[in-house]
Length: 184
Length: 290
Ligand code: SF4
Ligand code: SF4
Image (cartoon, rainbow over the protein chains, first blue to last red):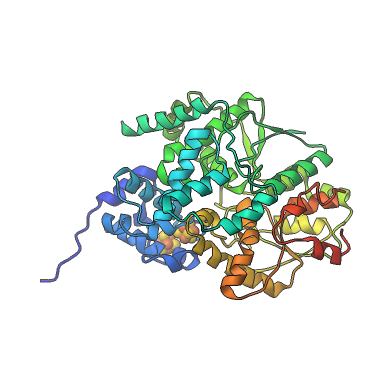
């Protein structure tokens, strides 16, 4: 007997709870994928990711790189005839993945996000050279981009030291409070 | 006119010339920009991937402090920041529960009293093309430009809300009122790869290559942008792209505010032209502008 894919609704429901978007609105017209600048790099294109979520295949979505290639450029949601906001769906999926300890399959993007939020929490602002260095350390690519970075330094665009905001305690309180409310 | 300014993290860094030229232009036009005191990052590229609540609370903190400083209008030049701030405003309007939770995080109530402007929207709505034309006297005569809006300036619909989403005209109109000739092209709102520049550079290199190839066909003097991410990716990576694809572009990528500054009598230093990687000086001299 042929095995029929088991439809497990919970992932779609989870997405809806997270961001309010109903993936069942999608009727697979593919308009989203056709305009997507990074579809070329995705194994599952945006419309396929949505279909996968409709069918409850959570691991397929969260263990694959595809969803992490979304740049949040918002071309797809601008064009969707069903007014489905795939950017919100992607954000929700990535958030759920992070919360449930799925490993981000693209190390450079994981490093970027971790470093970005680390700096905001620590200093209240991003300082760009710090961000670059942190990502390089995490991905062990210290030398990459040194050449592109140097002219910026000479043109006076990179400050070497971070600017720490005065009310950095308040920023840290915001991060802590978000964690507290979300664990409830 | 007095406006709050939320500069964002790149205003004094990679987008320094953006900041310098905006400050110069506003000063010339008699617009008082007052930077918010001790502002914090909006969480831009990363918070929305991690936590919706965090991605709403960080902008809310800024909105509340702008309110407390007595502002009703806030200029947010960085497009990524203005996207996050405008999104927070819209979502809190539509979702009371989110608003209550974010207010609990920040520890204060918000009265929804701030209007956020991105930089192009600001010049269109608050200054107006007529005024721009009057004061600049068609200074950029004969300059041929291509306006590149990038993905976020006009999107998402209902959030940015000031121009045609997929075929925007606002920046073209500003350029024409400065006297330049603005060329039409089909890639106005394609994406440059935004913050992938620091993670998956390969994506940015590919997308910017596609853009530069299209730009090359137009034989324009320069590309005009309004977003620090577009500018940095197309300008700073241009050499790398030329090398990888064995191509030659050499096309300057300037902020529209830099050209506005020149038209208002600014020197190249006033608007930070020397900070660009691909030099705009030869093209500007060729057209007799510098
Ligand atoms: S554009 Fe909308 S309806 Fe069409 S495939 Fe994409 S999400 Fe589905
Ligand atoms: S927002 Fe993401 S999925 Fe949608 S078109 Fe842009 S990159 Fe593709």
